[in-house]
Length: 108
Image 1 (cartoon, rainbow, N blue to C red):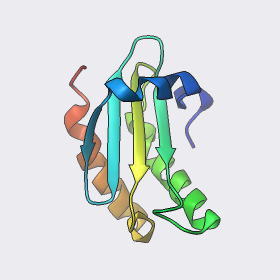
Image 2 (image 1 turned 180 degrees about the vertical axis):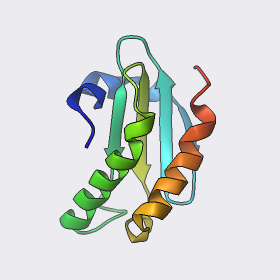
Image 3 (image 1 turned 45 degrees about the horizontal axis):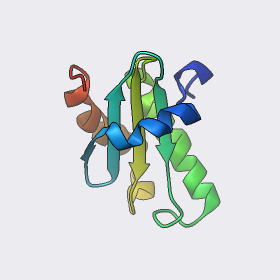
Image 4 (image 1 turned 90 degrees about the horizontal axis):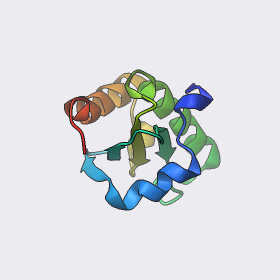
């Protein structure tokens, strides 16, 4: 689980218009570097995953995979797409790593 200090606050979502975006088959990532606001958030819409239990399970799994990449000076917002709930944890972790790794050295 992500510690509260690495979770994105409501203020971080206000930056969404100025964020860069990249995507993979099952996830979309919005990211930005910011000095005062930072953290990670996971969005799993009902349209992508119908059941509440499956949505919350996917959120917990994605948060666990995001832990090594979360920093207090970077905003990361992961949006899940249809089919992401069917991935095993190893597949989910590998896909998120491939998605996040290229941006770890970049700034916006």
